[in-house]
Image (tube, rainbow, N blue to C red):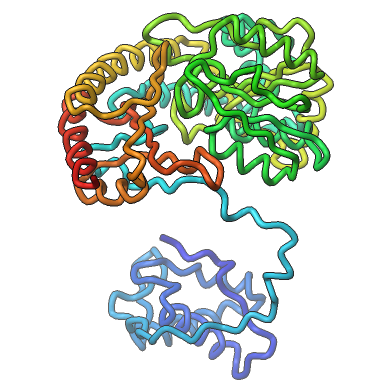
Amino acid sequence: MAIPVESFFLRPEAEGTLQAQIQQMIAQGILSGRFRKGEKLPSSRRLAAHLEVSRITVTLAYTELQANDYLESRDRSGYYVSDNAPEPPQFPPSAPRGDGVDWTRALGRRYTGGATPEKPQDWSRYPYPFIYGQTDPNLFDHANWRHCALRALGSRDFQALTADYYDQDDPRLIEFIARHTLPRRGILAEPGEILLTMGAQNALWLTAQVLLTQRRTAAIETPCYHALRDILSQARCHLAEVPVDADGLPPDDLPDRADVIFCTPSHQAPTNATMPLARRQALLAKARDMEAVIVEDDYEFEISFLRAPLPSLKSLDTDGRVIYVGSFSKSIFPGLRLGYLVGPEPFIREARALRASVLRHPPGHVQRTAAYFLSLGHYDSLIRRMGQVFARRRGVMEEALSAHGLGVAGRGVFGGSSIWMRAGAHVDTEVLDARLRARGVLIEPGRPFFGPDGPRNFYRLAYSSIPSERIGEGIASLAEELRAMV
């Protein structure tokens, strides 16, 4: 590895000859650990030009450092940090520096302290990861994704790879969403009514910023997607929480006045309840009477392996009051961070302007790779394969839960990737989670999905990241811990 020439500079206040300053600069770099054994130094000509000194000055400094075993010369290759160079000294930790800023007063707004749950980064090393939202390497089509990524790197796609779209998106991906993805949900949209986002969470943030103010009211489900609660808290709007039932959000329980209604009709997050068609129509009528806008997060509609999903709210909307949120991050892989908004042009225009002021647009290479992966049929094959595997895993989990008498609070009518669970009222599932981790079992405590005073005995079990053959043993360990907490 070569040490960049930009790593070297002469300090105006330094004392001694130029040769001595260069020697000291390199020796300090080695002794501090910044320059490591075997790393190559810039050539004497290049370093001299960079420092604006004579080449002989640099050469003499290199020679002296070589004599002191800091550097070694290799034939026709140059100078390298010597294998015999002095080791960086081990200093005791320095005392913390004083901070002259009172950050309790300097911070204008705070974003910490939200309900985002803690999920271990090393989840895959656990033998029983009932963890939601992670990619199963046994299911992901890595070979075809890599092929699409390489194709997107080709010279024919150079413009899509390197261009700054400003506030626009890859037209190929937008066209596919408009012509193929949305019609499957009964939605017809023009390109100007579609905006790409950095996942569904970014789409919800853009929506909240555009639609809500401190004087407006947002109606949300409870329990609900924990990040949405944080987003709306940051927007400083009024919150009206509506408890969900077995069919999702009950329109009759909405407040008399709300400006925006957030809901997840396909698979309610996290209970997995599916809103029946009659209730969807009732919700649209209620929103019309209230003159409210509905934000439909079409969460996990793709993973409907038991039966075909119901039409989206957006497809039933006749007066343009539904804003639709979709995402490829859950169905392809979470690190993709690619979603989309669909809505009337006046709304999309403002959301586009806001996105441009924050991040311009999702990376062009990611957009074009996804466009190839979708248009070549790899996405549909992935979804079919996931549905078949998830169906088997869910069957195994249902049997194990029944055998151990564990309480199920909600399961997806059409499929999904998880089951919403309820433990005894005395059980704190965050404590349960800590005890289970010692046994190699990961669950997701339910507290973050509720408000601050919500129940603590709910939890979520996902079957998307655990093989069928391990589910039974993991559920058995879970049941043992629950019995021990009685």
